[in-house]
Image (tube, rainbow, N blue to C red):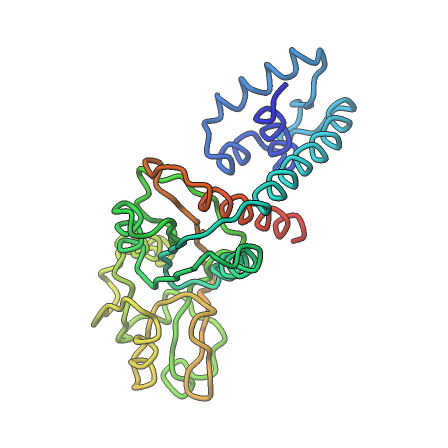
Length: 294
């Protein structure tokens, strides 16, 4: 029995699904199944009841789940305590797209710098493409990507908060009085849209028709700039929580809802550094704590 086996076991127990756990752990389902089969053989007991669509813990599984959580928590606490005694110093650079999901990253960076005052943090605003390029070139240690994005060559953790998509519009415009927008509401509107093709593809799926059917008159990189266009009478497809609505503009969520994941990523090829490993360990701990709390 090793820590990897326990992490895999705990993830399956929490997700109640091998498929969901494999996705969260970024491993294939056969790999996960083999690991659990080996663990059950080593212990001599079944850990999961697989007779139902949602797997459940057996009596032995419930016991191991409690012990495994305690062991993993102690390991992470010990690792952080060991790192906190080190005199870490240097620059930590994060390229990030605009998203409210950045909150947990920013909070973690502030806490990390309180523990390690000789660490300088740098947050760079960038599109998913530019953030990925910065990480690949080594000018940024990490990137925060609004999914879907091209992440070949990256490892990543999923951030707890998803992006909620909708339309930014003037309160006194054609959609005045609405609290949400349907695909039909977008017909004929002049729209500014994100440049990422992957995002456009997701929106096209929500529309139920090709993205090109929309009257897109321009693109934007930073949502703040798009909001200036909206104040002048245009509209922007965007995520919630970046531009604060005021008396002039409002965010109208899509109906039915459209949400996309956000990930915190790093290059697989990048050399491991104590500084980046320490920050990543703290971030993972805070993500897990927030996920369990929610």
